[in-house]
Amino acid sequence: MKNLLFVFGLLCTLPSFSQDFEAIERQLEEINHQSLRLRSKVMPIIKEYGFDSPQMDSLNSKISEFDALSLDFVISIIDQYGWLGKKKIGNTGNQTLFLVIQHAPDNATRKKYFPLLEQSAEEGSSQRSDMATMKDRILVQDGQLQIYGTQSRMVDGKLEPFPIQDPDGINKRRKKVGLSKMK
Image 1 (spheres, one colour):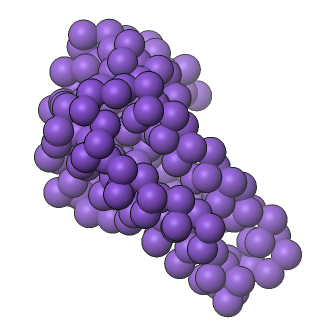
Image 2 (cartoon, rainbow, N blue to C red):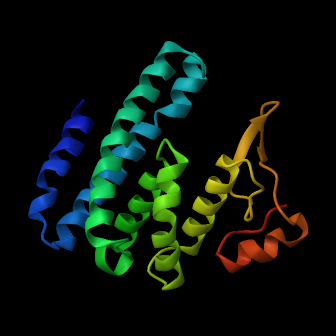
């Protein structure tokens, strides 16, 4: 609940920013911190209670609520200022923009903001690996083959990448966007 009140407070203060990028950066850093804090509980709860447990359902509900409020905040920033790169809001702030859009519950949101992230990455203001990760997520969600091999799923208890276009060229493409080699 404390996390949700914090994000709601962020939303209420947005109109007063008037290009105060330091304030936006601080608030994005706090969203990042709160998100990591919530998500750090996932594996311990799965290990203790199981993936399909009421405890995990409760945590997923809290994460979803937090993500929804964070998404509203991030969208209002991007809609007002565009994709603020690391020069304006720092690495963590920029990474938070990416993560919040990446965690959006629908692919339409990712598709809407991907061109802004892509342009920012091409200008060197955002990570090319973030751009590649979002591109793959969009493709996989649309039932298409991914390009960079960043999206995986659990198959028989093991993590396995979703199908990849041109698997022979995967490491060349990954290197180009700053991702490590796939085996």
